[in-house]
Image (cartoon, rainbow, N blue to C red; front, side):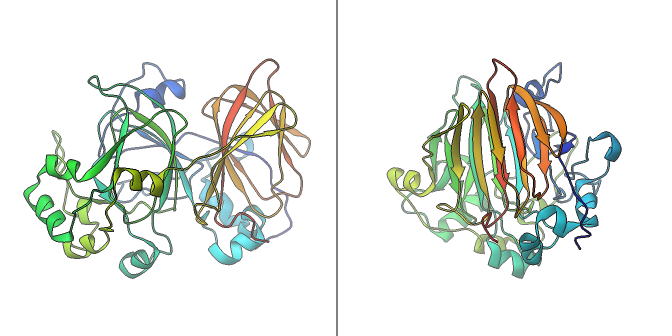
Amino acid sequence: MNDNRTHSVLMMKPMRVERTYTGGMLLDRWQGKEPAADGLMPEEWVASSTPSRYAPDPTTGLSRIANAELEDILLKDYISEDPAGILGESHYRVYGENQGFLTKIIDSDKRLNIQTHPDRTQSKILFNSDFGKSEAWYVMGGRKIDGEEPYILMGFKPGMTRERWEELVERQDIRGLEESLHKVPVREGDVFFIPSGMPHAIGSGCMIAEIQEPTDITFRVEKISRPGKTYGEETYHQGIGYERMFDCFDYSSYTEEGILEKTRISHPERKLENQTILTPIVNAEHTSFFAMDRIRTEGRWRLENRNAFAVAVILEGSGRICHQGEQFRICRSREIFLPCSQEPYEFFSDEGKTLSFLVCYPPERNTE
C-alpha cells in the first residue's frame, strides 16, 4: 500500500519480444541499432509489466528500469513495492498492481497471422483473466514490401458464417481466409480501434504503435512453419481447443464503408499554448479500456498526473522532462513511466526542434 514515498520519472530499457512473424528493420533504425535488419524480434513492449505468453524466459515482455539507482529492476517489481502510490489510489482499488493496458511498437515485414482475441467475459471464463484484448493502432509509418504499400486486414465481409469460417480454417485456404476480410491501405497518422472478437491482421510493411488490454492471448487460424521450429496446437487455440476458439470470433459482417465506420478513428488536432499541438488518438469516446494522446511541441507541455500514472514514448526529436527539481534527457524511442504525482511533469523540446511523443493512459483515466 501507499507508504507516502514520492516517485519520479522512470526511464525504461528497451524490451524487444520474439513473435511468430518477422520484421523489425524500421524498429532497429528508430531505436538507433545498426545494422538494421528484419528478424524474429519485431515488437517493442513499452514500459511493460505484462509477460509474453509461452516465452521460455518468464521475464520476457517485462520492462526494466534504466535509472542509475534502480537499474535493471523490473518495472513490475518496482510497482509492487508501492502500487497505490505509483499507479494511483483509485486505479489500485480497481486493478490492483496491473497497469490495465500495454503499449507496443510493431514493425512487420510479413503479414501477421489472421487472428482474434477473447473479450473480457470469455477471458474470465476461459483463462481466469480480468482482461480481454481489444486494441487500437496508431500508424507511425511503413514501407513497401515486394512492391506493396502497407495495409491491414479486418472484419468479415458480408456473407460470412461460423460454418464457412471453420471450413476455410480446416482446409487452410489461405487465399479464402484473406479474401474474407476487408483489406485497407494505411498511411502515417491513421488510427483504428479493433474490438475483441473481430478477425484482423496487421499487413506487411506496417509500423504501428498499438495500445491494448494487458494480455498476450491470441487465437491464430493459419498454420505457422519455419525451418527448425515446430509450433504446437496451443499456438493457435491457446490451450482451449478449436471449438471454444471459434466461439470467440465475432461473426458480424460489414460492407467496405461499414468496416471503416466501425474501426477508423478521426482525431482533430487541438492547439495549446507554448507552441504545442495535442491530438487525441483514442479516448473515452471510443473505449474505456485505455487512452492515448500524441503531443507535438516546440516549447513546453505539462502533464498533470495527480490521480493516475501514464506511459510516454518519444516518436521524434529530443528534449527533457522536468519533475520535482530533476531533469531527464529524452530522445527518439525513449520510453518513460510517469508515476502518479502531485507535481506536474513538464516536457521541453530542445531549442529549434520539434518533440513528438505518445502519452498512454490507464483505463478510466479520469476516475477520481
